[in-house]
Image 1 (cartoon, one colour):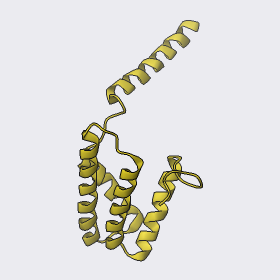
Image 2: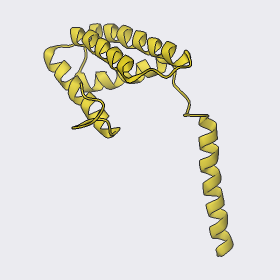
Image 3: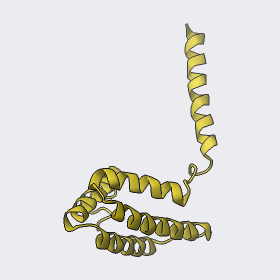
Image 4: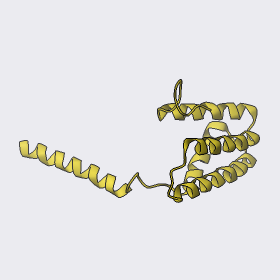
Length: 128
């Protein structure tokens, strides 16, 4: 019985190590196109977007994701101010595409996401 438990624990640990090493340092980063599709799919579901809005948001999100890739590929980690300015500029473009009601819902969903990541709320770093 003790041997079975040790074998089980060994396999469990090996599974975690294999999964962690397959992702590489910091996990595998999705491409700008993959991230854009994920963001857009989530927004379509949450905001009931028109096809025209989908087209415009696809361009905005893809351009922003490519810009972020360039920043990260430069080898330097962007500072908080750079990230915030980038996020604010993107939000202004998104606001121009969405209706007032959709944008309000978008902001609520963004806040929920920050809270799930532990960055929102009073004293948090992700307040918009």
